[in-house]
Amino acid sequence: MSTKDFNVQIMDSSELISRYLDGDLDDTHFAELQKRMADREFSRMLAEYSVDHVSYYELGLDQRLASEDVQVDAAVTKSSVTPWPAAIIAIAACLLVAIGWWGFGRNSNNIRRGTSVVESSPSNSIAPELGEIEQRVIGKVTMVKGRLAALDERVKPGMLVHSNQSFSIEAMAGTIGMEFLDGTAMKMIGPAEVVCSVENGQKRVTSQNGNLLLSVKPQPPGKPLLVVTPKAVLEVLGTELAISADLMTTKLRVNHGHVLMRRIEDGSQVNVKADQKATVSPSVEMHAEQVSQLPDTWEANFEDGLPESWIAGEILESSPGAVTAVPVSNRWGLNYTITSNVDYTDGLFQIHEDSYLNYRIRMKESGFYQVLFESRRSDFQGVIPNHEYQETHAEWMKEDRWHTVSIPFTAFRHSIANADGTWPDYETRSRYPRMEELVPFFVQFSTLGDDLGLSVDRIWVSRGMPDGTVAE
Image (cartoon, rainbow, N blue to C red; front, side, top):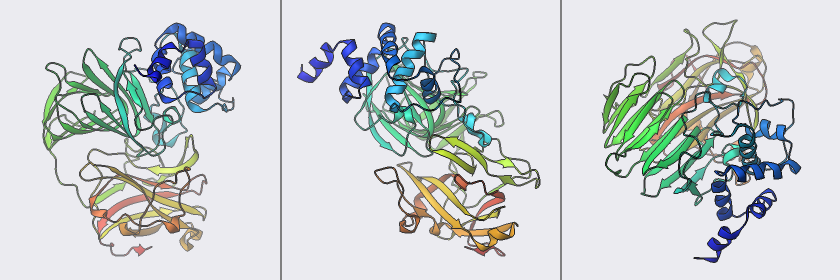
């Protein structure tokens, strides 16, 4: 036994908690703290120790306590305590009051239509209760990209993953990769809420919302890996697959092998084989179909209202058929956005060297706006985020009228965040060199924190610039 293992074993609860609250735990001791959270007495002790450090209501506001019995005063300011300590203390406090948790989840529907995010626990959580599953190591984190929600800021490559571990990714296209002990690999692409567990040798991935890419090793007989979403259960024996899920829809695409997809509502099921896909949704008949080549054109108009799957936007009362930007709150501030659906599994369209993004736009005030798209590689081997086009105080903005813009995709500039979380100047960024390998999976218009009355009434992708449009 190594000295490090021995130290973890003999550290008593009071010392472990004290060092934790002082921010003096290494990753090994932190993993031990997580395991001890399964013990109610340890959680009670942690909650009591926390009284001198933070306000209970501040924790409830900042870390989204899972208990419905805890009422949080929205006027309370955020705590200055670092996110991970607050998260663990919040769990302990929740156990102290409500006895039982699963949590940390953010219902993706809270930001649909762009209303301010109100953090709450899912009313019909499909995750198993803590204590029902052994708290043992089931794998490790292999990669982390993008900004993660506060509860996952501690996650980094090499961190051990324990059964019933939850992951929360708030940022669009933020990614966490993990590997189970048998080599089964999974990528979680944000926004996502995922819980990973192993019970009696059977793996279970519970996804309340988000996008998953799995490469599953052959599983033990009678114990397929289960992927559970609000609408479907997927039984995976060994394959490569992509999944997109939210409260209303689950999409599956199988690249290799086969997957049994079962609809929770009525138990009906379909066997999805290699190069096939299937969808569980109230508006779509469930059946397996061949994966077809992505179209190189795409269009969204709003004559029939804002599509149900779109994340942010609101139909403009003065101009039916047009959608306007709405405020969306997240931990980085307030943004006025129009955001399409996120379709990681199928993608929206294929990009070519002569592809253009076209849109009819109107702004009540002159200022800054940007168009953003996120993408994955066509072979599913990575997310390529942050492709932006920006305009500031253009002449057409001063006229308060509809204006048609056509942007070649080659004009979009790609970037990644600096190590300190800031972004390089837009002028210093360059286009992504291999546009043809990109598959966009959502599009967003934004004026960031300024309400400039940005509206669009049509968005479409074309090969070549359409007649009658103005190239920017």
